[in-house]
Structure formats: structure tokens, C-alpha cells
Amino acid sequence: MRGDDHLTNTAAQIQLFKMLDSKVPEFGHFPLIKSISGEGLSKRVGKDSINQLRSEKVHPLIIINYLSKIGTSSSVERIIGIDKLIQEFDLKIFSKNSIFYDPNDLHRMNSKYLKELGFDELKKITNPIFNQSFWEIVKSNIDNIKEAEDWYEIINSELILEDKVVLSNDLKKIICRIKTCYKTLLFFKNNNHYQL
Image 1 (cartoon, rainbow, N blue to C red):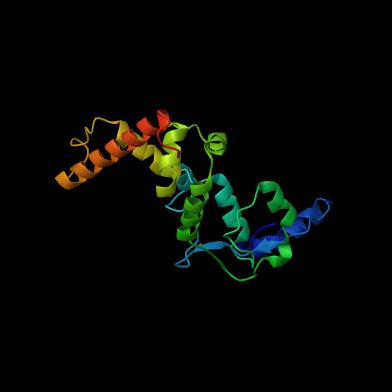
Image 2 (spheres, rainbow, N blue to C red):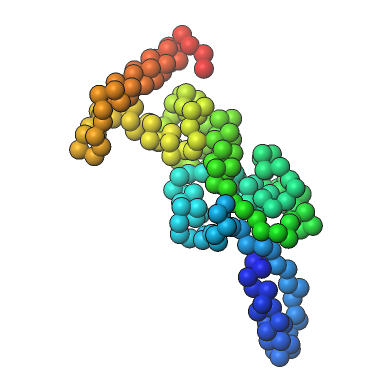
């Protein structure tokens, strides 16, 4: 299985196999995945590359689910495990038309999945810099794991950001309130006054 951009060189490759007295494989071609604007995607560079998704810490299961379902009649919203994806895989359900990748769909799916993800499952895919209590508090307000890490660093910093970013007084007040709320919630949770 390969992209339909190799369709034109298939005949030459079949001839090469025959000249080498080798068994000619069965070739299958899929339409290439394109951006919403119709441009081709790169797996290595650009804002929609795998490297970019990795740096944003988009959950790998979400990427695999999304890419295995776009261009089919299957709902991208239904998140299933790898074994189930393999079991349900069927070449016949894929469209022969262009497949369009929408990063907004992927990020929305990731956000929805993280909101239900337990801390033990999170630890299987990443080494979080925060504890379970923090995760339970922030997971309903983030779109990816990187955002949770960013919030953890903000909450636990001494707010020495002026040399990197110019913060308005309003934003400084909001960050201080968030830090206070988090520390209050953590206090009550640790003292069994509050059940998360």
C-alpha cells in the first residue's frame, strides 16, 4: 500500500520485478492526505507534521485513530484501542477521492480524550512533571498535555516572566488567582476536606 503519487511508476516497477525473476507484489494505492486548503502534507516538517504533533504532546492513540478513519465512513469521534483498530480495518471503506486532514478535528478529539484520561493511563505515554491531583484539576481545561505542563510551570514559578514576556497587570492578577485557587484546592484535597 502506498500513495497514489506512485501510480505512474508502478508499471516500471513491475517490469523491474519481472526482469529480476522475482514475484511481482500486489500494489495498492491510496489518495494522498491533503490539508484543508488542498496542499500536500509533510510527515517531517511544517505545522501539521508528526514532529509538531509530538512537540504538542497530542496523544498517539488519537493520531492513529484519526488517520485511520479520515477518508472513510467511520466516525472519527469513536476512539478505540490499537487492537480493535486492527481488527476493524477494511480497505474497502476508504474513499478513492482526496482525503482532507483538519488539524482542528484532531485537536478537538485530543482535548475530549484527555478530559477522560486517568493519571495512570497518562503515565503510560508520558512522564508527567506534575502529580495526579494537579492532573485531575486541569485536565478538563486543556487541549493537550503540553498545556498542562505549561500551566504547572506557571503555577509553580515565581512569576519571573517579565524578561521573556510583557505581562499586563490584568494578566498577572489572573495568573496569581489561578495559582491561589490551585493551591487552595490542593490544600483541601490533601486534608480530606474536598473530594475531587
